[in-house]
Image (cartoon, rainbow, N blue to C red; front, side, top):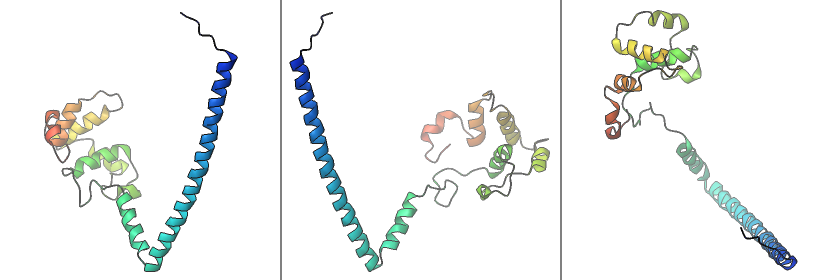
Length: 165
Protein backbone atom coordinates (compact mmCIF):
# COMPACT_ATOMS: atom_id res chain seq x y z
CA UNK A 1 0.00 0.00 0.00
CA UNK A 2 0.93 3.56 -0.51
CA UNK A 3 1.54 5.66 2.60
CA UNK A 4 -0.32 8.94 2.90
CA UNK A 5 1.68 11.79 4.39
CA UNK A 6 -0.14 14.50 6.28
CA UNK A 7 1.58 17.83 6.51
CA UNK A 8 1.15 20.37 9.29
CA UNK A 9 -0.52 22.68 6.74
CA UNK A 10 -3.13 19.96 5.99
CA UNK A 11 -3.86 19.60 9.71
CA UNK A 12 -4.18 23.37 10.15
CA UNK A 13 -6.59 23.54 7.20
CA UNK A 14 -8.71 20.69 8.63
CA UNK A 15 -8.76 22.40 12.06
CA UNK A 16 -9.89 25.64 10.42
CA UNK A 17 -12.71 23.81 8.59
CA UNK A 18 -13.85 22.02 11.74
CA UNK A 19 -13.90 25.31 13.68
CA UNK A 20 -16.00 26.85 10.91
CA UNK A 21 -18.45 23.93 11.15
CA UNK A 22 -18.68 24.35 14.93
CA UNK A 23 -19.36 28.08 14.52
CA UNK A 24 -22.13 27.40 11.95
CA UNK A 25 -23.66 24.76 14.23
CA UNK A 26 -23.77 27.23 17.13
CA UNK A 27 -25.42 29.82 14.88
CA UNK A 28 -27.99 27.26 13.72
CA UNK A 29 -28.66 26.20 17.33
CA UNK A 30 -29.36 29.82 18.24
CA UNK A 31 -31.71 30.22 15.26
CA UNK A 32 -33.50 26.96 16.15
CA UNK A 33 -33.88 27.96 19.82
CA UNK A 34 -35.38 31.32 18.79
CA UNK A 35 -37.78 29.57 16.37
CA UNK A 36 -38.78 27.09 19.08
CA UNK A 37 -39.66 29.93 21.45
CA UNK A 38 -41.72 31.60 18.70
CA UNK A 39 -43.63 28.37 18.04
CA UNK A 40 -44.28 27.78 21.75
CA UNK A 41 -45.66 31.32 22.05
CA UNK A 42 -47.85 30.76 18.97
CA UNK A 43 -49.13 27.46 20.37
CA UNK A 44 -49.95 29.08 23.70
CA UNK A 45 -51.81 31.89 21.91
CA UNK A 46 -53.86 29.45 19.78
CA UNK A 47 -54.70 27.26 22.78
CA UNK A 48 -55.79 30.34 24.74
CA UNK A 49 -58.08 31.35 21.86
CA UNK A 50 -59.56 27.84 21.72
CA UNK A 51 -60.08 27.78 25.49
CA UNK A 52 -61.82 31.14 25.27
CA UNK A 53 -64.05 29.78 22.49
CA UNK A 54 -64.67 26.57 24.49
CA UNK A 55 -63.49 24.20 21.76
CA UNK A 56 -60.17 23.01 23.22
CA UNK A 57 -61.78 20.31 25.41
CA UNK A 58 -63.54 18.75 22.40
CA UNK A 59 -60.27 18.74 20.47
CA UNK A 60 -58.37 17.05 23.30
CA UNK A 61 -61.05 14.35 23.63
CA UNK A 62 -60.91 13.66 19.88
CA UNK A 63 -57.13 13.48 20.00
CA UNK A 64 -57.22 11.11 22.98
CA UNK A 65 -59.69 8.85 21.19
CA UNK A 66 -57.43 8.71 18.13
CA UNK A 67 -54.43 7.75 20.26
CA UNK A 68 -56.10 4.77 21.92
CA UNK A 69 -55.32 1.30 20.68
CA UNK A 70 -58.10 -0.60 19.00
CA UNK A 71 -59.97 -3.34 20.79
CA UNK A 72 -59.86 -6.41 18.53
CA UNK A 73 -62.76 -7.98 20.46
CA UNK A 74 -64.85 -4.79 20.55
CA UNK A 75 -67.83 -3.75 18.45
CA UNK A 76 -65.72 -2.39 15.56
CA UNK A 77 -63.49 -5.42 15.27
CA UNK A 78 -61.73 -6.25 12.05
CA UNK A 79 -61.04 -9.91 12.72
CA UNK A 80 -63.09 -13.07 12.65
CA UNK A 81 -65.07 -14.13 15.70
CA UNK A 82 -63.16 -15.58 18.61
CA UNK A 83 -64.05 -18.96 20.06
CA UNK A 84 -64.54 -17.80 23.66
CA UNK A 85 -64.33 -21.33 25.09
CA UNK A 86 -60.91 -21.88 23.51
CA UNK A 87 -59.77 -18.43 24.63
CA UNK A 88 -60.90 -19.28 28.16
CA UNK A 89 -58.85 -22.48 28.02
CA UNK A 90 -55.74 -20.63 26.83
CA UNK A 91 -56.10 -17.86 29.42
CA UNK A 92 -56.68 -20.39 32.18
CA UNK A 93 -53.38 -22.10 31.35
CA UNK A 94 -51.43 -18.90 32.02
CA UNK A 95 -53.62 -16.74 34.29
CA UNK A 96 -55.14 -18.04 37.49
CA UNK A 97 -56.68 -14.82 38.81
CA UNK A 98 -60.29 -14.89 37.52
CA UNK A 99 -61.12 -11.53 39.11
CA UNK A 100 -58.29 -9.50 37.54
CA UNK A 101 -59.18 -6.30 35.67
CA UNK A 102 -57.72 -7.72 32.45
CA UNK A 103 -60.38 -10.44 32.46
CA UNK A 104 -63.33 -8.28 31.46
CA UNK A 105 -63.86 -10.09 28.12
CA UNK A 106 -63.06 -13.67 29.04
CA UNK A 107 -62.73 -14.80 32.66
CA UNK A 108 -60.25 -17.67 33.06
CA UNK A 109 -61.21 -20.73 35.04
CA UNK A 110 -60.19 -21.02 38.68
CA UNK A 111 -57.41 -23.50 39.42
CA UNK A 112 -59.86 -26.19 40.55
CA UNK A 113 -62.18 -25.58 37.58
CA UNK A 114 -59.19 -25.73 35.25
CA UNK A 115 -57.93 -29.03 36.66
CA UNK A 116 -61.40 -30.54 36.35
CA UNK A 117 -61.85 -29.11 32.84
CA UNK A 118 -58.56 -30.53 31.55
CA UNK A 119 -59.11 -34.05 32.93
CA UNK A 120 -61.41 -35.08 30.09
CA UNK A 121 -62.55 -33.27 26.98
CA UNK A 122 -65.87 -33.75 25.25
CA UNK A 123 -64.61 -31.79 22.25
CA UNK A 124 -61.62 -32.97 20.17
CA UNK A 125 -60.86 -29.37 19.22
CA UNK A 126 -60.30 -28.41 22.86
CA UNK A 127 -58.30 -31.57 23.51
CA UNK A 128 -56.04 -30.88 20.51
CA UNK A 129 -55.52 -27.28 21.66
CA UNK A 130 -54.69 -28.51 25.14
CA UNK A 131 -52.14 -30.99 23.75
CA UNK A 132 -50.50 -28.22 21.68
CA UNK A 133 -50.41 -25.90 24.71
CA UNK A 134 -48.67 -28.56 26.79
CA UNK A 135 -45.83 -28.50 24.24
CA UNK A 136 -45.51 -24.72 23.80
CA UNK A 137 -42.58 -24.23 26.15
CA UNK A 138 -40.64 -27.01 24.42
CA UNK A 139 -41.50 -25.67 20.94
CA UNK A 140 -42.68 -29.18 20.19
CA UNK A 141 -46.10 -28.58 18.64
CA UNK A 142 -47.46 -28.57 15.11
CA UNK A 143 -48.16 -24.93 14.26
CA UNK A 144 -50.15 -25.92 11.17
CA UNK A 145 -52.36 -28.23 13.22
CA UNK A 146 -52.93 -25.35 15.61
CA UNK A 147 -53.78 -23.04 12.68
CA UNK A 148 -56.31 -25.54 11.29
CA UNK A 149 -57.74 -25.99 14.75
CA UNK A 150 -58.21 -22.31 15.44
CA UNK A 151 -59.35 -21.11 12.00
CA UNK A 152 -60.73 -24.26 10.44
CA UNK A 153 -58.28 -23.86 7.58
CA UNK A 154 -54.60 -24.37 6.84
CA UNK A 155 -51.86 -21.75 6.61
CA UNK A 156 -52.10 -21.46 2.82
CA UNK A 157 -55.28 -19.42 3.05
CA UNK A 158 -53.92 -16.79 5.48
CA UNK A 159 -53.08 -14.36 2.66
CA UNK A 160 -56.70 -14.33 1.50
CA UNK A 161 -58.25 -13.98 4.98
CA UNK A 162 -59.05 -10.30 5.20
CA UNK A 163 -60.31 -10.51 8.76
CA UNK A 164 -57.55 -12.55 10.32
CA UNK A 165 -56.87 -16.22 10.67
